[in-house]
Image 1 (cartoon, rainbow, N blue to C red):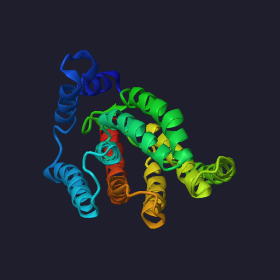
Image 2: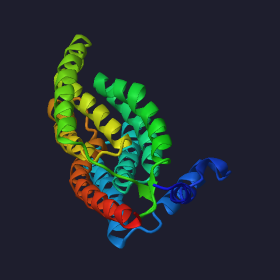
Image 3: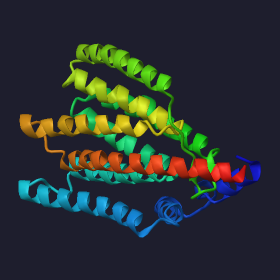
Image 4: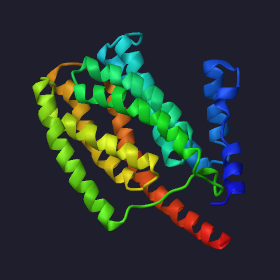
Length: 272
């Protein structure tokens, strides 16, 4: 990519840190600027996901007699909404993915601690929060002028084989560690923790295969967060719905990334 195109892409990104609009004003400006140029379908998917999770969480909580102003409900709903924003913005290749991902990681880590998912706690505070900061700095240097979003690529066959080997090895080792910490479902927890970490690294490196890992993670996490309903430890409905949305979103966005990667390749060839 030539320098002029890259500089043009960067200048089109939100200048969040140079404004004095306050926290909520900054979030509003981020949403406005990052969604500019989106199609009606893309805007609908973003709005629908947030509205659906919020509405279903409210209805379910009221029907179960869960206080709407309780700390658990407010934190889980906020984490779910921020998670939806991060997931959709990642699919669109937008820098806002890391801003919302950072905030989601903080809240999700606190919620996971309350349910004894220590693997989730460690990965959020020790890995995800720093990587969200790092990811922002990486993506801003690889903005493609086609759509003003992060450029995309795919792993080779050899890279995919190494990926399977590394995830399998790390998952087993981490599961053993969590079992010593007396956490709930240590190997399932360890599996999602390792997979999520590797998926985020691949996302930062802009490899489309990270969506395949997210499909697996999301399917397992739906079961992980359904468990508290079954064993009576709690009712984190918003978080459970968030993972259900993630599962659907990962399939949709994987298809989109492959399509955008092909278009970007054709666009670059046309420039040459």
